[in-house]
Image 1 (tube, rainbow, N blue to C red):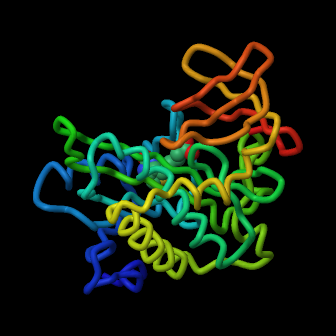
Image 2 (image 1 turned 45 degrees about the horizontal axis):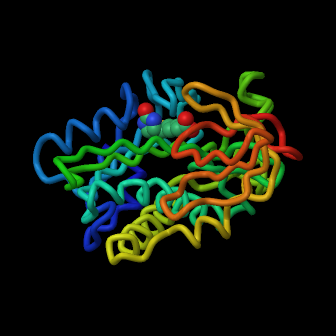
Image 3 (image 1 turned 180 degrees about the vertical axis):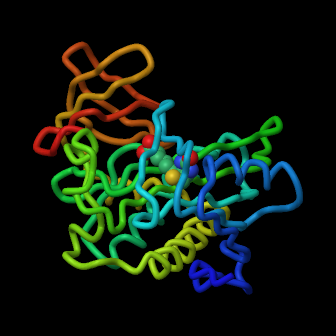
Length: 261
Ligand code: BTN
């Protein structure tokens, strides 16, 4: 059967050496995990036109109509220690940003959203890792990009804080070409971190969250203050009235000057 996604295949390379395409699946991340649990799956990509149980960060659902966006998971067996697993999220976000920048100006919102100038979300990442002691045995890099989804067609709660690459570019985007660019950018970022080149400076330079007044929701608190920097392991540093907070995880729910998340 004709499968347009195979045009993004990279047979001689590591990432994208095999693309498994689905018309409909529960979650590409779950399928990627099953692949990693079985045979050597490093570099295998799972892409779907539709997910019936797409997952977002912090237990949320990832919603996308069929056939307009890009939803994929990359199986990786990273040559990284478990204590460096945080680098994979930042490197993956940098790769998505680089691929999207072929079409429109986009930036990063901590920890790994890709956003437009006004803060509207274009893409989100759900990175899941498996470790055995300090050995990272596998990682699933799940990526959802709003590509050709018209804002007018988005449910109100999504349209309030999101947009799509086509909206920004003012023209429909070839999703297969975007996937090809993304796989290339991802392989380049992965090689860099595996060679010991931390993504932190590249990430800082692209992170729209830094220097802004933000509200960050963590598991047990909501912190309001100025996002002044990232520490050496990618944690967000927020100066609040009650002192400095260094946050390893959380959700930036508001950035002053941007639309609400
Ligand atoms: C977020 O911003 O909350 C992360 C969204 C990640 C969504 C992608 S879509 C492909 C992959 N499969 C999933 O179930 N989730 C990720």
